[in-house]
Image 1 (tube, one colour):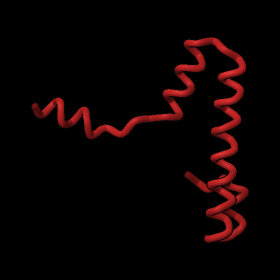
Image 2 (tube, one colour; image 1 turned 90 degrees about the vertical axis):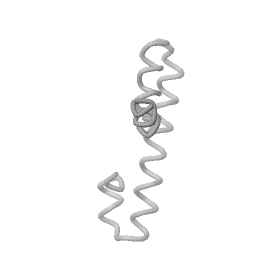
Image 3 (tube, one colour; image 1 turned 180 degrees about the horizontal axis):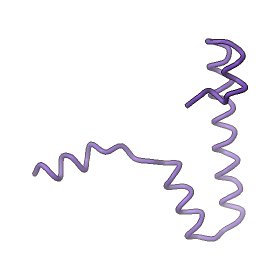
Length: 64
């Protein structure tokens, strides 16, 4: 029971999942769209944090 609860508490890794799935599927269009979504989310997150905390956060990409 303890091992089960510990394993369930581990958070999922969507970025790693997308990367592994793109590599295993070997579909270039899927991998390009996945990378584009990650880059866009990274930029939007950095831009939003940049408005809140200063423009240097935009250059750093939000510092996630």
